[in-house]
Length: 167
Image 1 (tube, rainbow, N blue to C red):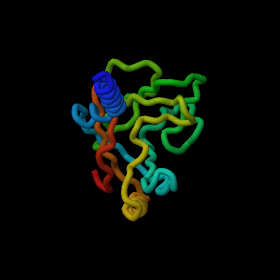
Image 2 (image 1 turned 60 degrees about the vertical axis):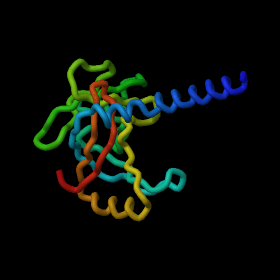
Image 3 (image 1 turned 135 degrees about the vertical axis):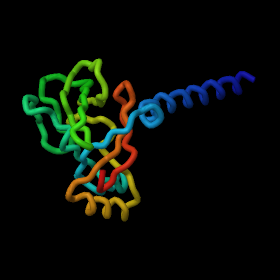
Image 4 (image 1 turned 180 degrees about the vertical axis):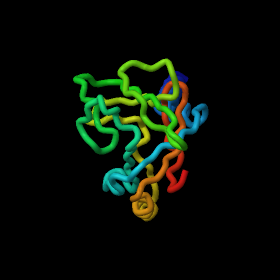
């Protein structure tokens, strides 16, 4: 009987950990609002991760007064700090663009909750996974730019839900 309880507790703990790991993406998909942003492909294939299109978000770069350490992807906020980065969004025609990059959570929405603890700012919307032949075709289709539909919840959690040629 003691062994059954131990196994049940371990299984429940694992389920809770899986829930915690996917909660931000799930929250964005279920409760988030849809926003359209411009994207461009960066890199289609990684032998370890499989076929995907790594996406660049040209309109989400730091504003001109910010400093960018890298000009690919979202770059890095070069302010001597690491940790949470919040990118507030504003609508510009049919698409959403970056308004401000902040270190403190903004009170106005929408915003993306990102992290720059690694060498670049990551918001969870950097890769779009596809079968290999579709990833290569999508990269060719998106060479002139495209649009990504992202969902953003009230806490800035994001989920990439679609990539397409037209708004």
